[in-house]
Image (cartoon, rainbow, N blue to C red; front, side, top):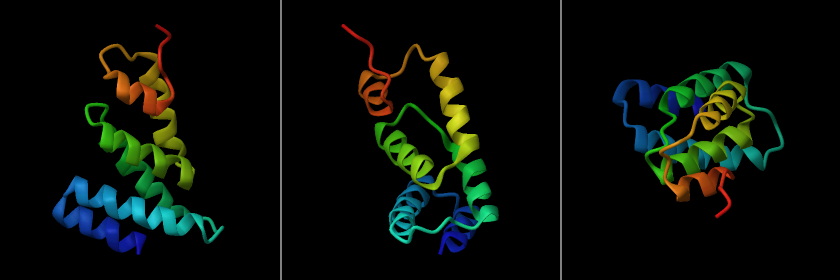
Length: 103
């Protein structure tokens, strides 16, 4: 199912649909207590690294959930590096990431 989602994204490039489908599949995968095949996980990792965008709270929420639940190291490291430089990110997005600043 993950491979079908990846193929669909490659053909249609609809980011919103892809993220929703991936999120739902990730929720299902988590309850199996099995690791996702490494080649598929790596491809998802690379794609989400490219799609990382802090302009959208919804995208940040979905991507963070997928990254954590599938153990996507490349995207996780990109997010960590990005956060070291954060300046103009909406506070609600920083709160979601867990990077709120004290008042």
